Length: 448
Image (cartoon, rainbow, N blue to C red):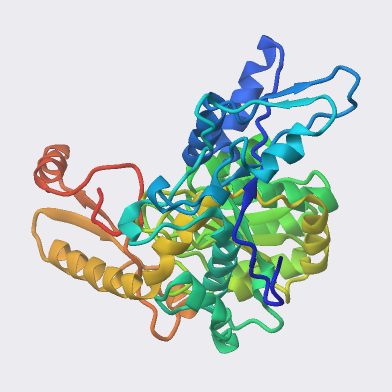
């Protein structure tokens, strides 16, 4: 049952995990590997664990009569907590009505494990309570509201869904709503699918990669479609060259950029980019992962804003996710919405959605602390004679471009880069700095 506000009332969530395999000749391995490596699509760890356990328990198996035209696979019921909290209704066993409903289907034999166990996945007990999968849809709704800017309170899920939407905080773009927010399994999946969506109605045109991007973004633009024009420096001279090309008759699909970029934290001139896009008819896709929407307001300059929710939105570095946000005032809005209605598929695994929602509840207060701490570290490093340069949006030459998009109470983010006068000094600094090490960013702990 679905409530008028979109929340699910039914306490028993049924998952139908479908496992598919793509078979291809060995000579096409390079193509398949490229898709696997760069697109961001695929199976999350929690989804894989769920399906693997269900397979081991015999819950994904069905014996189908050869005369049947289609197969039936039993739905998996997700329990409401550890076994000590369960009642008989949450168990997938010969006593369960779901078992008899499947068992009585002609040609179908439902196979359970020897003990009649069901496969149950739980959110970690450190959250203070156990959330069952019926909350997954509600969690996704809360995440979308949080991304839209309508939900800023650090409250439990049931409270969040009862709160009146703060329309004044919703990205400050006319007619924008949470319906313009789309969730993906990863940030790269959002970028890959938006690029593919744009090509569905604009055709196979080259894209523009402006500034030094996350490498997979560049590879997606290079390897899918007719390629891309890469402006790695992200400079004013690069925009001069782009304008010259457009005046010469070259046409483009879209310009992709990050705000700010990584690792030099340069901020592109979004005002000029938007002006060029309007004059020469190409879309603008902005990755706001590093800036994040609490610090910067870039939607008015974009047709689509993408983000990796894996990073600072989650903070805990224990779940992956991505989002794409459409600008209802954008020139291509109706085309993109139509294409999304036809092509979009929500592949965010329910458990991952629950983790994202829980992790992001303190997003607002966490960003405030991160802004203050990062700036303090920058000031300390800039004062050291052993440091050559510190790269941070507040201290870069591109700060005016950042400040044009900075929210009234926004800061400059939690990512910074530092260089030293010699490799030996850099190695010494790295080895003696007692923080976590890893190839990520946006965690709620310091990482290098």
